Length: 273
Image (tube, rainbow, N blue to C red):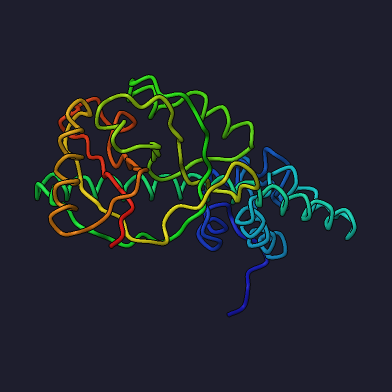
């Protein structure tokens, strides 16, 4: 098709898939001026000028600012353009890492909510034995003052993670050194354990890689000893030997809801025969 020598602003907008408002804005910003202003301030664009619009769209797609785009169109040197592109790559890498951190956290949290819903809907509080895959976790040793909310929403641990320039994801776990002390409410120490999004060099531990006695506890933590007693009775009946340590994996807790009847906590005790 033979191209016209010039286009009105309406024809230019339709041809290039942009609005008249956008073309006027580009004119005001000095990015894309019409080739001719006719009677009644009608704007006319040449074919050559319109060929700039696909370039504009592509640069916008890559995230460049209008001022950066203007410098490209007006004729930056290749070396200047390379520097701007290299800087944009650095900016996008930062954005990508931030997006990855947010996406990972939200996906992990959604999975916990869905897990808790399934447990609640099915009243799934049976005791069983399961294999847990081994993973590397960030941890912090602390005194335990029998205040579950302070232990789980842990200010010191949060500060430690931020100091390490990292971010946490997935459920909070607390490792108690003694199941018996946890059951009797005499536990004085604990280890807060959680996965980090970025690799962590220090203060890490391995968790998993073996069989664990597992049971979900539904509701607040004031009666969690009853679930421990049920698990110990089950282990004895089925001839399993429980280890001293235990873990509480907080699927849904104070982080997610203030309604303790919706709390779901998985108790994990390592077992053998």
